[in-house]
Image (cartoon, rainbow, N blue to C red; front, side):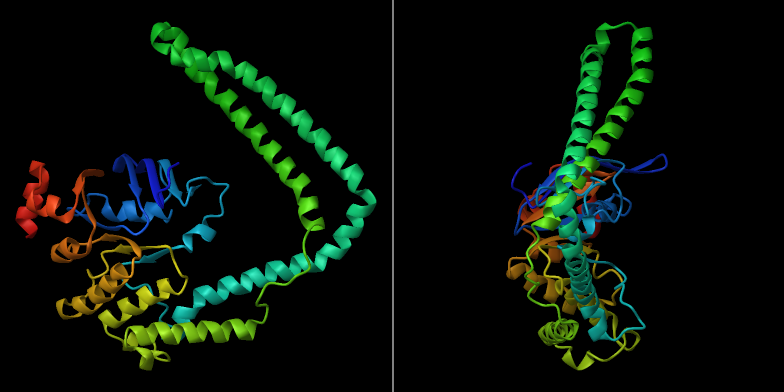
Length: 359
């Protein structure tokens, strides 16, 4: 793929017979501020949720930093942490204080990393002794298995080649032959995928021995849970001070206004140091007098260079802050451009009709 931060290729999402996203291909560059506007039911929120795979695409691919998040073999949680998401309804934990709401994600992530390290360091000495004694036998066995699977894959690919060629020329083949091909090909594809998966597992097993054997004894910079928690608390205090709510650190969300809750939801997402922020109508659940304080915080993030994708009904805000505006309708990006292009010179009748109703 290219150098874009997010690349969407052929993204389709269906709920039963309803097509909500229809074959969208789009790129988002680092530092862009994209506002997505459009009528309700046009696919805006679903598109946003598919970007970080909160919704599984029915078809297509979503690349983040070159990693395909639609690939089931990828640990998407690692990459999802780099994509802060703010929803319409705050999504705070009401049984936790504001401070704990903010520190929950980074502290849990750090604890998980420590646990993985300690487990690896505990088994390493025993594993290394085992490898020293039997490593050559293990490696030879795994290599033999890999060679065997590679031969099977090569044989299957030779078997598939004429069918792949036939598929490209299906139009020149009789209807009967085409039907036979369609019923035959999926089974072979399934076999190929199954063998390929086995091959990858075998190679991972083979590499695993070397990985553990070569593991360095140096510990991560921080293995003290208390130190990590102190650092997280300090970070929470700085973030709360940024939005003028440091005195609410030990309060519970139920005691806060809607605007305060949404600003805390935003800084909670910022606590993970994301590379991009996704906002799904962040002011839709707020009273009009609270909208401004949330938009001011988002405006600050934009001024600092944060990459952002915002689904919004606030047309004035989209015109002011966005570097690009997308108009979504019927599951497609029907029109897009700079704010001036979209708001002052709309091209499609559908966008003109929409703007006439909301401006």
